[in-house]
Image (tube, rainbow, N blue to C red; front, side, top):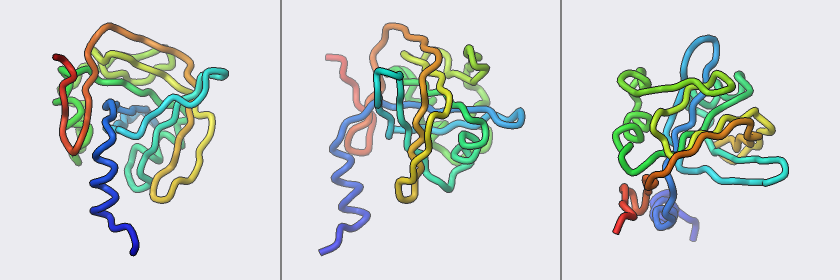
Length: 157
């Protein structure tokens, strides 16, 4: 019996993940989206990966720009996650953004910001796996925003 979309989505919803916003800039335009498919890949060199659906504008912008940033959101940034997950055209409106060392837009107040040079692109079905070599890091103390079973969760006890 083949795996249905609904069965696969339900199964994957049982994996708790942090929430990130992946951003870039291309031709003087900002692009960004909420991404849960993010992971560290290598220590030497420092590599991370993000999986981005091929049909979204941010996908082509990352491929063309050759660099991207990952902002790991804190528990108090649910509204930012929702904004960047939406279909709205102006995702950056009303969002406090800072520029990083590579000139990339970073979500202010995120518990971590990573700036990456595009290291590799791999096809992954309807997504591309973008591998980035981390060039700059900013961190601060905070509680992460978590996503589990199709909703945000709070790990504070």
